[in-house]
Image (tube, rainbow, N blue to C red; front, side):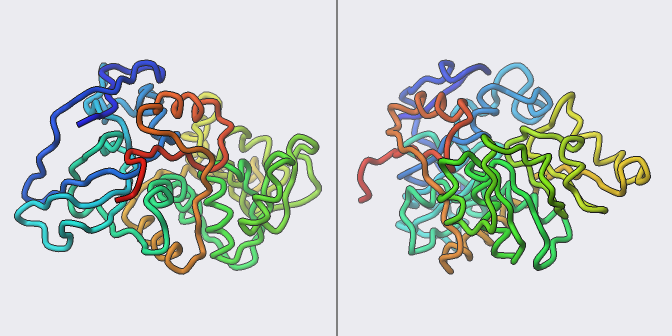
Length: 327
């Protein structure tokens, strides 16, 4: 089968499309024929091996998993002897930030990590419905969000940001979204109550206060956003921040309340992927969530997909079509 392989850490040109052995599922696994996958921020970071700390799990000097890809949608082709819930022909999707080898024509996966695709979406839509939404949900479940509370989302057109806007509206928050002016209509269509054009206005200097500020692109900081946080407000970023400050501030800000005006930061460690997938699947079925798709690439053009994602200007998600047509 064809697969996208990286034998060392580095930029997208370290990736090669090669012929490799088709995987054989173990007793508790299924073999999935991949119809669509994605290229996302998780994949780009994994291929480059950044931040360096993550190499403790992925391999210090070279990747342990040499086929890239973390998100997929496809059809069960074969099942192991102990598989009980899935059967051949089932349409499934999934995500694992530790890597799934999903940039390939086939992959094997534990039955516990493959979930049935909602009937009301395509393989391509399913393939990009989890990664950004999982990280967005891990912003929300780290705080005590209540109905009507004011939340600002910076980077509202990215995979995480566009998901965060939709999830926050599901939880009945008041959402102020930050994006460029040309994409304001898109963000409003996702449910944002107010939209700020960052090319015309610095959102950190507006005369408004928010209970929560979610920086889904990591381009601000707790200190810049502190003036727009209410007393007791919380700042969360998807990025480690300058000198990894977002890893350390969660341990400092809650204990020096007078210095930080009872405002604090939280690091959204992305745990419990299954919980996220079950919620997203439910919302898709109820037509309350739809992943934003920017571009689509064929598997043979996946290096171009990586380069585009690394530019940091994508809207929502990037699809990689492994099969040109659904069978």
